[in-house]
Image (cartoon, rainbow, N blue to C red; front, side):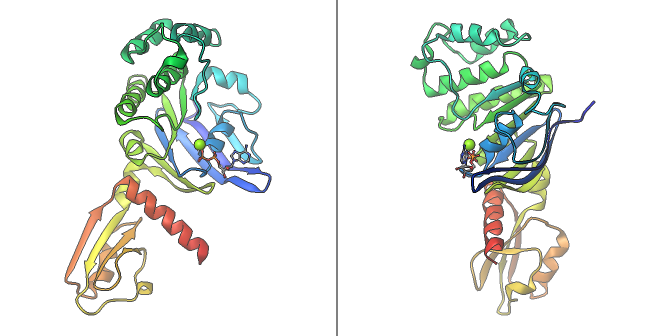
Length: 300
Ligand SMILES: Nc1ncnc2c1ncn2[C@@H]1O[C@H](COP(=O)(O)OP(=O)(O)O)[C@@H](O)[C@H]1O
Ligand SMILES: [Mg+2]
């Protein structure tokens, strides 16, 4: 059996002269939660649409659940649950009607299961979709994507524009599905705290390029802030390796590294600083530093 649910190799998408996705490669293992994070316009939606066969890649290879999405779209769609960024739904239908309507597209639609989620989400079955609040609509979109018990759930910014409570509920739903059924989830987000809570593996994308792709634990394990208070003599930044200046200049400085090892500190200790402290970072801080480093290297 294939251990990867998703495999992208050197994927590129060019719109006229705009390179939306550039030479992107990644793998998502079966049963894992992959969080793709990036700012607006980074290329998340374009990547997702190519994974679903909704956009044709300019170059590169895509395999999702063993299928080529562009050629085997219908076969793949039976096995995937997808919530698009826009969460389009027929507003004139009631919740009950849209559930029935949606069920017709899937042989494996599980009515009892869908009902159970519907109850858990406290969705009013007789209400019209257009009357639902934003949060309710987001939950309904998730339910419509989950009712056929997909092997792979693909969510494009599942909780953007929602308040914290609904976001948490949505995340809890995702987590419970994954934990109880060992399904794979691929989701995009620009909300770092939510990615940090639910992802096993994180990809950081900026301007179409995947800058980081690692298990969350590894990312956090290797990234550190090194605070230093110099004692008169201090090195020039060129003398320090595998670190880059984060904040400050002069006596008190903070450096960032994404490849921390204890012996990195020796180069600081050589200058006998007054104070030397090592701190772990949140995913948000790692994200910001990763993007900054990429921008700086571009200007060099
Ligand atoms: N259909 C399209 N035609 C032309 N440019 C597009 C199209 N879709 C997306 N883009 C461009 O591709 C880049 C990536 O967009 P997108 O994948 O939507 O980013 P994200 O989802 O991360 O916000 C942006 O510069 C966007 O303007
Ligand atoms: Mg998008």
